[in-house]
Image 1 (tube, rainbow, N blue to C red):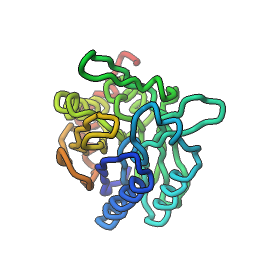
Image 2: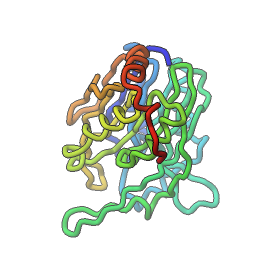
Image 3: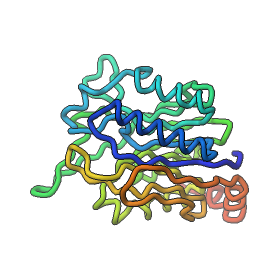
Image 4: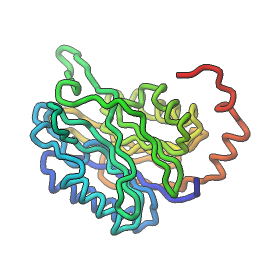
Amino acid sequence: MKSFLAAAVQLHAGTDKEANVRAAAHWVEAAAAAGAELIALPEVFAWRGPLDQERGHAEPVPGPTSDRMAELARRLGIHLVAGSVLEAVPGQDRPFNTCLVFGPDGRRLAAYRKIHLFDIDLPGRVTVQESASRGRGEDVVTAQTDLGHLGLAVCYDLRFPELFRRLGTAGAEIVVLPSAFTRPTGQAHWETLVRARAIENQCFLIAPNQFGRSSGGIEDYGNSLIVDPWGTVLARGEDEGAGFVMARLDADVLGRVRRELPALSHRRLTA
């Protein structure tokens, strides 16, 4: 990989798709103006509302939102991880939660459909059943770019280290994790898990998160993170507020960590 500036954009997406996409574009443009070459948006940045309404707001890929993100990446000359969009697929009754990567020429470099869906039922407290409204992905996805080898995961995937190990085995030097991680679980586990996945796989980890209470009643944690392969937090967002955090991803740090603590070459078990 090369050394470069990366940014994680923090947003509060609602049910107005046009307003959401404009806000995303605004902060991507601001991060690019500050020098970021890789910019990542959070999960479901284009539309977020009640799960039972998601099918009506899903789009094909390519489609209106993905086309706008491709053009944004091309116009700014950046690598853009377009968080995730609700992807409508012919013949599928539920949309996928799909993370898209675009290169500086606007070409789509990768698409990852979220594998692990968040289903939880705590009577009297909270019930979320993503599997009722979303399809489940199957493929582990990486993308070789001019900046480095990217691995892709989304939000709840963070709790499944075997996915990250497979991304690392596939060559990922940077993992991007668009998220809408909830406040209660975020306060307990967000930083710990993000740093752990970076340390275990000796990679940079970029984790843009949503913040605030969604129209579906879920409160998100914010605190977007960029972490290096030693587990050092390079940048952190606030609990609340839209914007971006930025950090330099140093190729020398990646090489030094992997050289001085060659744990990846010491593995004896496979996931």
